[in-house]
Image 1: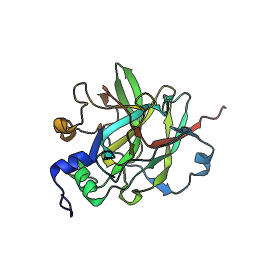
Image 2: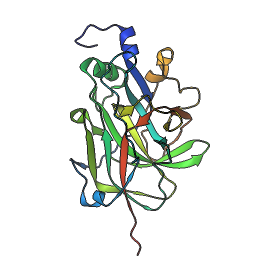
Image 3: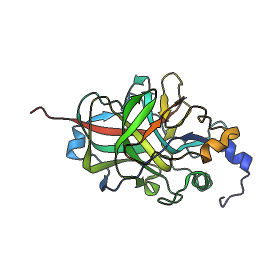
Image 4: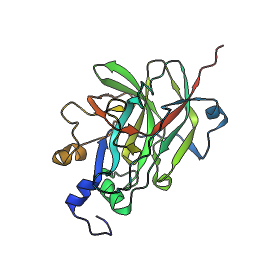
Length: 251
């Protein structure tokens, strides 16, 4: 599982898991270190007064390495701010960003074993998705950005400008999708001030060592137009992603 000699029990102590689901797309994006001209003038969805650092590598049993895998999720509350990724007017998402920690080799191997797929293999990956609420915690996937290999961005915050902006409408939600895994997960945080909802059915939310089956059974929401349940509400953690929103110009 890795080059170092580590027992399964040790790995379970060191690693925490958050789950969600994903989909694939075929558009192109430009990877840049700073936003485009549009993004500079954009509203940053998900911005808060205080931003935690992502977990990993582990610094001991009281500071485990945690990541999310095979999930679409969105923050319902971040640093006490409600609905940070809800769209309140028509416009477009012109860029998105993610802050990734750099797990050590053994930790990366564990995440890869759990979440690797045919497209990205053992590498971390992500994209943003636009969801439309259908009631009773059901959401329709209406569009998405390309899914990207994030291996070379581990250890830093990266902004991705979209060559083709995602048009969004009032009432929609911008979520983060991880086809494999991503280390943009900050824990532990205030449970009251940090909450996120994931694309899993009721009864499949637990992610501790006694519910490993929920991890291996996780599957991404891959088809635009599909409807999935988002029954699982997690607290005390944050997905570190952002979306750059530009409102529609008045005619």
